[in-house]
Length: 355
Image (tube, rainbow, N blue to C red):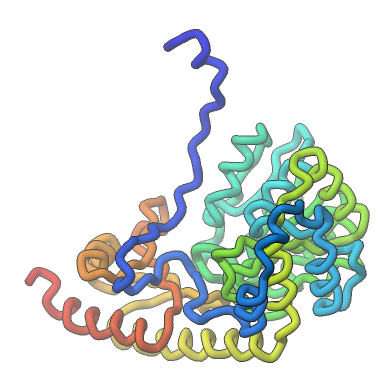
């Protein structure tokens, strides 16, 4: 090792889903929305004056913050925006988790959480999910440096009722609790209704799933003004201009079109419910999904074999070679046509997997 190499930070990075270059693939591996964003987004892009790019964007993201405040019936001081929910979550980890006590999150959850902990030198522990992949709330009734819960969880798709999260909040008044709601619009009630009762709660959401804007990288957090101010102070100490002008304008346009947003969410949910029935007929089982994906295992054939066969035929799903979940596939919900292609292949291949 060269002398200067000993000072390089070594981390095990997050591994994102594959982004195949072939446009003819059925891409069901990264939980993107299969439908385009709201028409107003396209209008903004068509009318955008490129000369505006010579100017810095608004560091406070006022336009987007105000639209989100209107949509969620909050004060703008209760909202923080960033470059995708990953940026928002990383900023929250950096801002709030500075205790000697370990933060807590489930042992099966979004795999970026331990990456941030290692990057920011945050101690952590991972209480095990129960045999049905649900949170054991009592595991969080102890001293800690903070708690992070993805709800619905990834990759398991399971949605915990707000009462479960509130119970954990009641037992942790001295810790900041982050609820990562990337998939909440496909599930049940958001924990947003709790933020005015629990000043230590931060709710994080994204435009990447239900608002069809994964390519724009827009995320946001909602909480009491003290938490939001702290996030902004860290952001301004790190990078004042985290969101570009185009993202702010298109994000605001997407929030304004509530009717389109609701219709696309329902369209994805309908396809998900139909897909569940077809998967059952093919011998798959899965938890009740509260997301835009299904976490499925087959009764006879190992998940890895199915994953490889699908990939060889240009159908991409996500496989996790990890304890307890290495016999599951995470299947994103695509268009009806994409799902038909998936099921047509599975019906044929599952009957002759060795052909």
